[in-house]
Length: 115
Length: 113
Image (tube, rainbow over all chains, first blue to last red):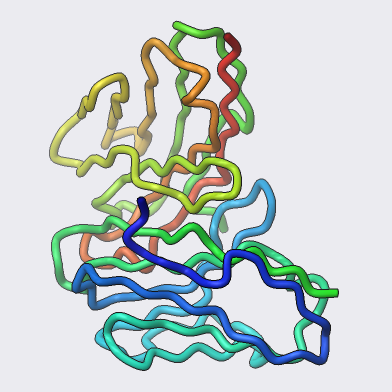
């Protein structure tokens, strides 16, 4: 069982909807990430939170808005998405910068379909 | 510019055979080299990882071989099983900065019974 929990597992939304993806980890990790993955492609980094502060935004369009309410939770707010934004959205965590482990712990992902 | 090149794109192996996937990197600052395994509909999961101070690491049927001078590393799956059928991604990062992991394009492995 994954220790990074993502909800919902599946989401279908229209281009005018507002929805949110949620992620939770209880491993005490201080870095959390959002990745986007298209079919048969590697994960693409979107955002990095380090100690609850946004540290990296990989030039992601503003229709994606991340939020880190506390060290265990990470949200991704979605608004006015386009059909090409349909993908698997993965949340991941790692112990944190400066720690001697580069392992990423991924959730099972939220499959998003934009109509 | 892609910093981690992975090959082959797809691989078909008979049950009991050896599966070999190769990766090459460019950035000599990388010091952590993981392999992730991803099943359909699931997120990637760490399979095995190596740091450049060793040339080989083995965990069960899975072995990473690392060639620092050639900037290459490979995954060997011995006695491949149908349950190993998945997509495998190599990656490279600074050990203290997992968030900047650079992934290879992935290899889809099919193990035929």
